[in-house]
Length: 555
Ligand code: FEO
Ligand code: CA
Ligand code: CA
Ligand code: CA
Image (cartoon, rainbow, N blue to C red):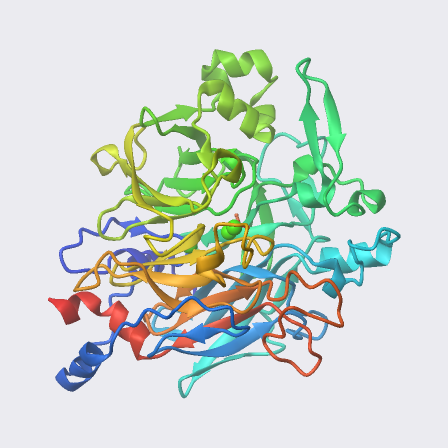
């Protein structure tokens, strides 16, 4: 395996996009750029130009529906054997692909996050049965199915396939010991057992995966503090994991880095502890790292870590956004008297990041989800998916412009790029990805319990979808639905292959609302065992190529 860091940075960051001034390193979830985007001849370009970009109608059909010019193949799904011992985990969310060699975009490793479990399918535990109580065997089975998977894939004759039993194939699970990248212990320990609630993520310039622990309190609950700073334990939603394992809640809610070479992992304490949706990096000219991450809960804040030494996610300062005044506010214990009054040291500030953020004046937002940096404007785009208690049902996309384009600066301007709703044609934005031409792709995440309900504001949108917002041409700025998900499913983890010819995508939790195995609400992907399964699909077709060449085709 060749890991040439410099060439990788060049590969991701120095692409030319027309008039784009590409920063030295610009990368996030799903954003790759390739200076070798294929040069097409006149006839091929003319054919792409004729291909329409058609919006598909909202649908409640139980299938993965694609607009004209797109085709998909199923790559790997829940339960598939990936090596002699391991199977692909449950509910894959974030998906990314790193080629072994920049010169060959057709062979590399896919990382898939496994976010949460549905006991009915994974362990046989039925939460709707009042008599049911999880056994240790069921908890262990569920712990195995969260975390992430590394799977080698290869494209031959235009078709992707998994290389089963490849030595790189491995699992990280709820049982895997993972050290903290921090000099002090966290609740008495130097390492945690397992990673869980792995929602979205990112990649690093040194070619590792970042997987983000989001709704960690589902698994081992949470420690809360009263007005006298006295702690108490709130039970988990899963009701059972903490009966068999006494892992502290404080060992979860971190950004976790996984090295694909050997599967080793570490939890980055300096980036704070909250419901991390994603972690989107920007490497500065001097190789310091800036990392953006949002706290996906109602009224959660937006954070930025600014590294103080090159290529470190440990040495640096965490800030929280005041989006009203356009300021990044420091969460550094040593320089913030208000933090010194409430917490004994920096470790406690980082373990209780949410409380610290409000003490310094962080702005509460409407559930910040995915974050991407626009390769053309350099703006930072953040999905605010919704905040129902505050009456925001459709969410919006927030745009941050760092002052003078300085990602390590402490002031910015914030504005709404697009607000969701029936008029705009989208709702509940979640994952974002910019393609090679700077078009913005966006998934929706209406919750399964709110979809298709006449008393909820989502009827018109039907199933969750993937949208593209073209950058150039007659459709520029329009929100166009190009893929519709199976019943109850959410489309997650959009990620473009380095040559811009494949869009990797997760189809997560089809059939989530199933109450009985006898009557699943979805059968996708239509296996013989008639059980719905999350899966990673590879989407190809001339429309992917057209959109990645859009500026050339419309100029
Ligand atoms: Fe797991 Fe915030 O979506
Ligand atoms: Ca993304
Ligand atoms: Ca998400
Ligand atoms: Ca979501």
